[in-house]
Length: 356
Ligand SMILES: C[S@@+](CC[C@H](N)C(=O)[O-])C[C@H]1O[C@@H](n2cnc3c(N)ncnc32)[C@H](O)[C@@H]1O
Image 1 (tube, protein in one colour):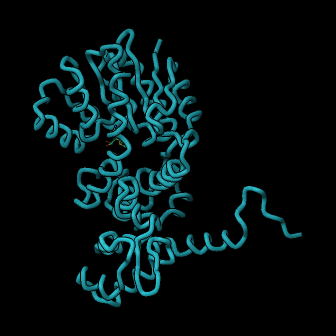
Image 2 (image 1 turned 180 degrees about the horizontal axis):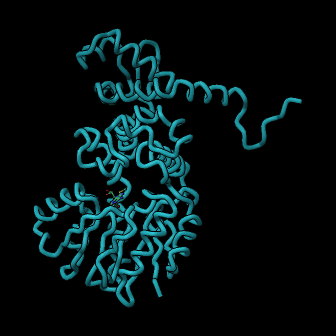
Image 3 (image 1 turned 180 degrees about the vertical axis):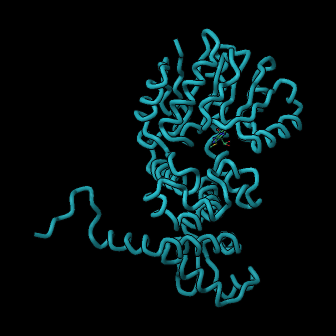
């Protein structure tokens, strides 16, 4: 017997359109990217509500008419562009592709970092290895190669990373500095942006930065250029080696958007070492975005897609976690959660943890 769709399902006709959008998703993606990067969406924006003919757009963008038509018609069926008579207009989706910062960070990340590698997803699932990474370089994890990626790939990786971290720092700083830490450890310090924000926030604090050597060098240069290197110490480390302890006596240990780069046993090992590095009364601040406690469907979608990148390109065993998965890791490491600030930025959650 044919099953009727459940109440949560769209009508079959709409689902059939969704299925075709999925079937042609890579083509649609490249059409949108080309419309954006060849200046056609910007030209349409300037054209306003009256719209422009394909001939006029070709003239304004200095592109061949055939190519412009191909892309515009692709844009029409992808809802980026409207067609009234012979005039094309920018639709809301086209405006988002052109001007929305999150959409841009995600599209650039998909195009430059993920696109070719994701074709190896099946191999990743069957082997547990990041099979797509070979498209970028010969490393075991993407983190080993981060400082050597081709400039455009590196720029898109950092822009994606920073987009989801930078705007969280102002909300996090008063929470971390409420206990007036003198010694803070930034675990997975990346390019040093959080350390820089801390130095500006508190003139006394000294910060140890932990990361792989390539990233630490970028952080060192950034902090030196900003005149803050004297209050910073740099500790190259591979967190995957469980025998390497962290610098001790820390009042605060900061881990943002970091633990999701590891598998669960690795997370527990990192948290155990962090617990041992705490000073009496010290606290560990874990900030992450959990896909199960997002308000917005767009955020949930982005996070779960990011998991596919972690699997296929980053290291083959990490993911964006659910909050209960992270709580279980915290508990296994012997820490306890003193405070949970759920979605303190709207999407990031902070666990304030203690070792005693
Ligand atoms: C997603 S970034 C997060 C950076 C930063 N905390 C933020 O909030 O944007 C993860 C960082 O962890 C570092 N990392 C990943 N695996 C590592 C490893 N095995 N050893 C040392 N650092 C590692 C990466 O180099 C990167 O800088």
